Structures are given as C-alpha cells and as structure tokens.
Length: 72
Length: 391
Image (cartoon, rainbow over all chains, first blue to last red; front, side, top):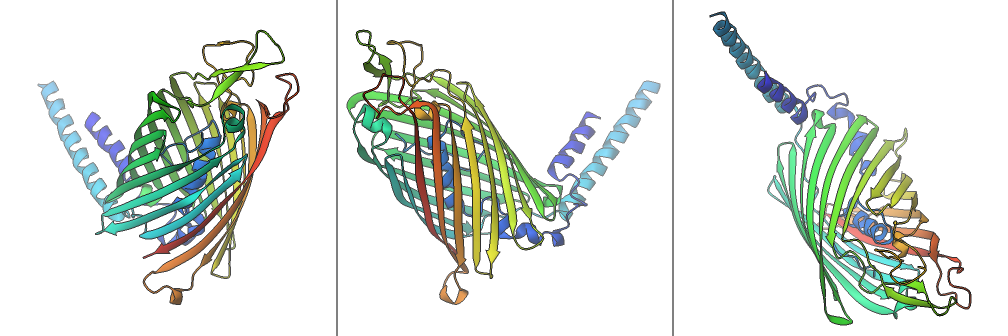
C-alpha cells in the first residue's frame, strides 16, 4: 500500500493531472507573448535587483543570486 | 491459511495497482510537453546609478548559447565603476573610487520536463572577493501549467581592508529557494517564491563606524568601529502575477514579505503596465514601494562607548521607506537590418528612486546638538541602456 501511495504521489507531483490541463496548449498564445514573461531580459532584471539589494535590508525571493557588494 | 491467502491477494492487488500506476505515468508523460531551454541571445548593457553622492556605472555582457537540444551555457561579465562621496564616506572617511568585477558562468541541462542548472559566480573588488556556487532544478507538471523549482547556493566572501594589510575576515552564505509558477487561465499566471538565506562570519563593513556622545562634552561625538552579530538568517516570501488584458498589453505586480533574525521586517509592493505599440515598440511603466523597520542594534547615535553588544549606524539597517518609478521602451530592430541575427531589440529604462529615512540622521548638518540632526533623505536616477540580439 505504501508503495502504491508513493507511486501515486510521485505521478501527481511529476506529471500530475497533466493529462487534461485546463489551459490547452493551443490556448497559450497570450502566455507565450514576451510581455507575459516574468523575466523578459535577465541581464536587466538582475542589475536592478542588485541595486535594490545593496541599499535595502531585505533580500531574497527575487531573481539575482551571488556576487559581491559594490556598496561600501 | 486465511492470513497467507489475504497476504497473497494484497500482494497481487499492490502489484496490479503498481502496474496500473506505472502505465498511467507512461501515458501521462507521453501526453505532456517537455520543458524548453532559454533562447540563444547576447545582451550588452550599460548601467548608470547616480544619487546620494555615489556614481556607479559600467557594462554587463551576457551570452547564452545552446549545445545540441539538451544543454545551454551562459556567461556574464559585469563591472561596477564606483565613485563614492556618500554620506558614509564623507562623514567617516573620505571619498573614493573603486571597481567591482563580476564573472559568472552557468550550464543548464534539459531532461524531458526538468531543467537542472549550475552556476559559478566570482566577484572581485580591491578589498572584497565573493565566490558563489548555485544549483537549481525545475520541473514542469500539470501539463506545463505548473513549474516547481528548488535551488541552493553556497557562497564564501573574503573581506580585507585597503587601509590595513593585516585585516582578513571571512563570511559564508547559504541560500535555499523554493518557487512555484502557475498558469491559472489563458491570460493569467502567478509565481510564488520562498527563500531562506543564512550568513555566518564577518558581516559588517570594515570601514564603517558608529557615533557616541563624548563623556567629557555632550555636544561632541566620538567614533568607534561598528560591530554586527556573526550570524544572520532571513526569510523572504514573494507572490507575483501577470495578466494579459483584452487588447495586447499586460499588467503585473507583486508583494514580498521579509523578516530576519536582526528584527528587520520589510514589505515590498510593485505594480506595472506593459504596452506594445505598432509591432516594433514595447513601453513599460512601473511603481515600486518599499519599507522596513530597523535592526535591533541600529542607532544613529549611541549614549556612550560600547553601549550595546552590537552596534550599527548603517542606513541600510535603519527604519526607512523608498519608492521608485520606472519607465522603459523597447524597440524591435527591423529584420532586414540584422544579417546574422534572428531578432534584435534596443532598450532604454530610466528609474527614479527616493529614499526617506526615519532614524538615520543627516550628520553632514553640523553646529547643532548631536542627535537633533534632521533625518537623511536622497534621490537617485538609474539608467539601463542595452542591446539584445537573438541568434
């Protein structure tokens, strides 16, 4: 039973209810438009996030990672 | 006998259900869509920050190229040329110039609906060196409507001091990330991210100092080195959305909640609108609001020397709020002007920041009783100008 449950959850997590996604592939034209990208230009968004990180106490849950400070 | 029979039946049922589940998995996977690697592109960016007595500018070049159908590599070369006469520099030391160079490489490997990534980043200044290794795995599920990502980074910083050849300190950083991107409708998607960052080691700036009231003259102040705790753990949770409007345009926004073991609590809101125009222009405007409470050991003026176990007067650890307005334009270069490349854009963004501090005092104001200086504030302009080419 445990093995069946494990396999069941593995399938849910790995491919889940994907057999019938509620937004069909042919309905995803708007989602594929570059204006719907969370990170259209990574070089630009990483830079502006670095600007925020070096001047604020908060950090994380954004896009950039790593690097030094440049803020002394 | 009955028990043996029941066990046999149970095993048979489990085997049968296992076979059925495995078959289901194969069917579902065959019907699903595989993940895709990022596009091959080159970005050449010039950045300029000007505000609060600091000017920082330089280039950033990012190149990404696929190798076969399953691997993509990228490299980034980034420079900050810093000229600083900030309030910290002019009240505690003197203005200075320095350069930070950051190099990074990364590799993404695609396997069916998963992308595994590794990146290495090295950042060098004359008195600071940071090395970061990052690992990430993302998995598409629910027919490509959900993407789950797990990430881990480990970094080591080596801190030295240009005015002291003997000074040498280290700090380690560990970073754990979990994120989910979810398509809700054909026009609406959301992202959720949770990130924990831990630091251990020398975490303060070796040049910065704090003020305390002179024991012999209440109208005079004396400086001593600041002192941070040796550890810090922070938690950040963010939620973001994008919505495609009935005409070709989109609104987007997000919220982040942040806390850490230094008692800083911060809220960040942002909202924006992106509007294409005549096939070759995209305009983007956004607003961002940020506020935070101070670290428990922050003060702009201490009553006496070693007044606390930990001492800090950095404005980044004070209570403050900031807001920013950003406007940008992207121009798609006509295909006939691009010989080798498939697509190209020219981009220009201007951001205007305003920082208003509650308890970080403007110590450039002199001739008044220490502690009664007005709260500090400043504004900054940030320019991003870049060329992107896809090939």
